[in-house]
Image (tube, rainbow, N blue to C red):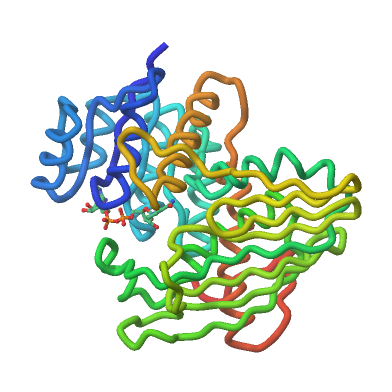
Length: 344
Ligand SMILES: NC(=O)c1ccc[n+]([C@@H]2O[C@H](COP(=O)([O-])OP(=O)(O)OC[C@H]3O[C@@H](n4cnc5c(N)ncnc54)[C@H](O)[C@@H]3O)[C@@H](O)[C@H]2O)c1
């Protein structure tokens, strides 16, 4: 069965969504919507999509799609999810799901009330290296330490100029991906401490942070990110990782080298993702993860599995990010259970 989809938001990252949807036989994007009519039309022409809209409600009423793929930036997410929830079966929303806990909770409630499912586009956990790590995690036994590191010197501001303008930058951008990885692979987050840095004078918000999470069960994760590291080549968009457990250690190094230490010795594996026919290095790790994530979305639509991550699961990822700012501002350890942001 082919599911009919409406994509809302035809900007920079939506091109990856549309390329990946075009390669999945179980889905067809039948209409796109963007408030920028010229951008919507150009995108539809590029992908051979028959219908173009500039207003989300009109689009939803006209299309009544099986799924809605929201690829706009965070300020519009709550309103768009609330419009989509009663008019489709599955709402897919890009990260960050929202800018505040209040908005995020309203989005989850809207889908629950309407009986639709909410899947957050957290594609890092769907990257091949992290799928490989997840498959090998049970052999490690109880995990006690992890590190997730995303450091690069790539000029992201060419493709995403808004990143230089936002007050809350790296924690809300890549940080949420890394917090989702930590919760997914190590366990629920219990406390967070964090330091932020503003290194590039062109950029308004923090462009580097270093956080430490204590998980339920006692494991500790270090999570660090910098958009201003002097590395040649720049290493974007690779995440490096280390996970230590009672029976072994997994080390994800540069160039997708996964070293597996176990009781029997050490194995070095190449976990580089395939380059999609429409993709190119070095972006293939992201592009392939979008395709894997969307294949998962189709499994959700077909009732084969539950959303990973669901809107409800992602509430704590967002809270962890928001609490990281409070930790950095106050220099305190923030307990995450029942934590509520002061603003928002
Ligand atoms: N998962 C990832 O790896 C990844 C990578 C890059 C960006 N992103 C996320 O993708 C989202 C989009 O980022 P981007 O860089 O493509 O942004 P962008 O600004 O290039 O594109 C957003 C588009 O949405 C449109 N839009 C905004 N509000 C709208 C509305 N109410 N109705 C219809 N259209 C509307 C804008 O006109 C614009 O064309 C962000 O949330 C970003 O964090 C995710």
